Structures are given as structure tokens and as C-alpha cells.
Image 1 (cartoon, rainbow, N blue to C red):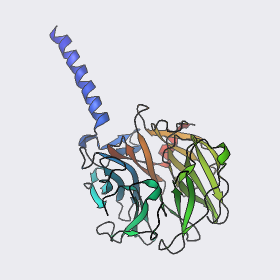
Image 2 (tube, rainbow, N blue to C red):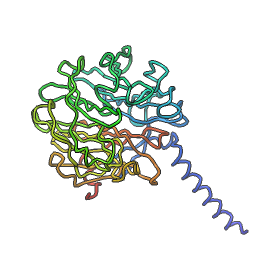
Image 3 (cartoon, rainbow, N blue to C red):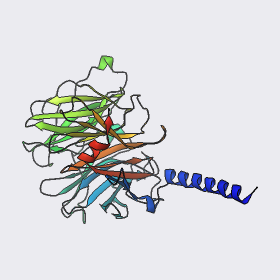
Image 4 (cartoon, helix red, strand yellow):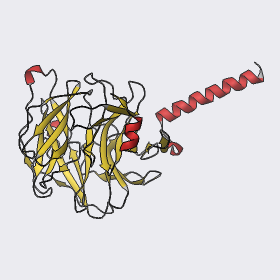
Length: 366
């Protein structure tokens, strides 16, 4: 073998190994990347190896001091007794080390939801239980941007099955109501709106969203994400077992809801989340596969300019092989900027940040 040929082969082997390492284990020098001509910032909240084997179901909030806070559940594997709620704070390029912020007993913890009240109090909702149908909703609060936290308390004393936000952030309507997207998974799947008129102290469950069970092949709908279009008109998109996102609408501020109907958006029975921009533009984070329990790659952002009737623009913010998982997004907006956190192959939690104008420019026709 000539020296020149040997050098070419060695270079190819090195490139191949480096590419594999980047895919399987993001490192410190990859944690923050400018992409699309510096239009977007994309990265990871922590470096690997982490103090947990797997992580999933992230949530994100932007604090009043300009920093972000993100949380997820992590442990040996989803559903194992060691799983707790983990949290980081900071900005791209400067994140705190993940700390376990909630572990109330030796049962699995699930689906954290961060939410900031108008007064600036931070709420951390999460589920606890060995099985999803009998889990409970717990909550912790912070009045100082996460420096200290209250003890965890049950959101609805004695409840089994889950109250308050099941996975996505609540909204505050123009009438001052807090509305959380909730669902139960006892046999079949049923979704509902949980409403608080006293700033999260007490909650009243609206009736289940009615769906055409005769034509449903799967269990139903869960994990609503919500928005208010105009005063009194509230809407939700729902994860379903039918390979498509469902929708329901309320004309009375969230107290009663229309029968669930197909939105026209595909989804492989995976988590979704939505944010509404000041000009009314909706930005939905979801996986656009139409097979029930299908691929969770890519993770995409779709835009609607007509209150969710059509979604003409789409941008894949992470993609890979069909077996990859970029899923369970949490999406927020501040001004015209969108921030997304999401599961990265169950080994890390990634984020994506970009403006509406840059998103539209980079998006393709759906």
C-alpha cells in the first residue's frame, strides 16, 4: 500500500468514526450550533454522559431575567422507579448542570410542565406513579427564578389519573382563566380541559372531548395543546391514535367543547405542542408521520396564518433515520421568537431557537 493510499483510507476511517460519535453522543463542542446562516440556534442542554441513562418529555420557559429554564424526566428508563424530574437554567452556551429537582418517592416521575404566572411565579407540574392510569399530579413553585422551591404538594388532593396539565403548558385566557390540557388513560384515552379561576389553587374539569368512537381504531385522544384566538374562543389540538392530529373548539372560554375532528395534520401518536405569536400566527411542533406509532423523525415546525385551518409552511428542525427519535417538543414564544425543547434519541434534551421571519424564510410549502 502506498503512503498516499494509506493516508486517504485513514482519513475516511476517521471521518466515519467522528460522524458516528456526533450522532450517538453530543459533546461539549457541539452543544451550541448556529444553523441556516446564523438564523437559528440549536444545541443541547447538557453534555454526555449524564447522571441518568435516558431522558424524555421536556418543557421550557423563559424567565423574566432573560434566562431559560428547562425540565424533563430522567432515569434508567421511562417508567422505572428511579426516574425523577431534572432541571437546568441558563442561556445557549452557558447552561447549569442538570439537577434533580423533584423526587418525592420511589415511583416513576413523568411529564414535567413549567409555567410562569403573570406575577412571575414559576410552577413545575409533574406526574408521579408506577402506572399512567393511576398517576397523580404534583406541583412545586418558585418565587425567585428557581433559586429555591417549595415542597411538592398534590394539585388535586387524592386524585388518581391526572389533573392539571398532562404534558403541555397551560394558557391564560383574556378572561383570566388558567386552562390546562389534561387527559386520562384508563383503558381508552380521553382528553379534557382543566380550568382554574383562582391562579392555579383549585381546578374544575370540563367534560371529556367527544369523539366518534365507532370510527376510531385506537384508544382515543390525549395531551391537548391550547390557544385562544379571540376573547372566549379557545381551541385545542390533540395527539391521537389514528395517525392524525385532532382538534376541538370552545365558544364559551373553555367550559364546553365541540366534538373532536381531524385537523388534516399527520402525527404518529407522539407528543405535540403549539404557541401563538402576537400577530396570531400559530407555530406547531410535531412529528409529521401518518402511521400510528410510526417514526418520530423528523421533528418539524408547521405554521398557520388562519387560526389553524391550514398549515402551509413547514420546517424540519431535526431529522435522521426513521428509527431516530426527536420528539415530545415543548414550544414557547416571546415577541416574534420561538424556542423549542425536545427529546434527542432519549439520550439528551435539545433546543432550537429562531425568529418567525427566519422560520418562514427557511420553511418549505407543506
